[in-house]
Length: 317
Image 1 (cartoon, rainbow, N blue to C red):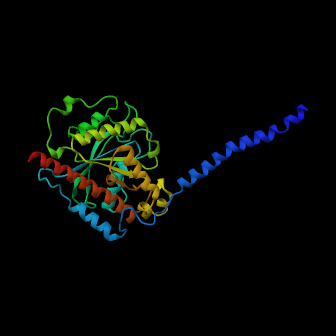
Image 2: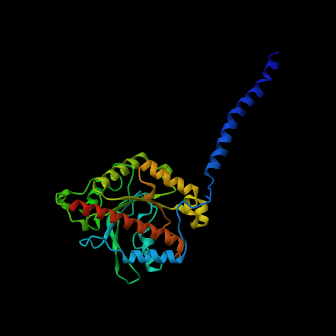
């Protein structure tokens, strides 16, 4: 009789396993459905993807001048994780104005930062042309660990204009205050006028807590020093297959919109201050759609820098 009582056991166990597995299968299907990119009926930002838009943006940047006479060039500081695309953004902007691919700043996806020095880069209006009225300032990459990447104290020194071009960062200790004479308040022309936090769109979901803490510290410092902070969301084509298929879908991608909302929620940075871009990495030729995204981001950086100048003028009145 014991053998007869064992027969129901298999179906019972099978049913129990079946009940356990089914919710997991359903969950996977739901997650796959959620990850499936969606094209929105209307773009959430309006952009005209034509040559006239690119021409207008280039004209704006070529003619831009800081509204304060004592400042010859707006200084834009690029910060971000190793491999996020800081140096690549400068190379991409430089390429647009030269009319061909350039790689003046060393860029790559190494595990540790390729930019060990603080560099200030001028962008010429054309090949052999005059430098435009802004500088793109590149730093050593941020890292989640306390003794890795550029230190928050060094970022503060850069904000205040104490760090000279080609200064070699040391992740283990902050810049010597005797070297940078931090007791002296430097003029506005030497200070940073806009900070841009560069984020790899494909890695936003796995940002370490230590990195969020560092970014929050930097955000507090930029606010205290009245320097605008914006976010550059790079590699949007790799984050969303619909954008990879056609870059013009960037503002119709529900997934990219969700990523920007996540930046807003996790870092406390307004949605208006988050710009998606695709840097040039492997291409041989320029692309107008890519150029428009890059130039739009550069234009917004200068608009935010003007806010810094407005704050300074109000404080000195």
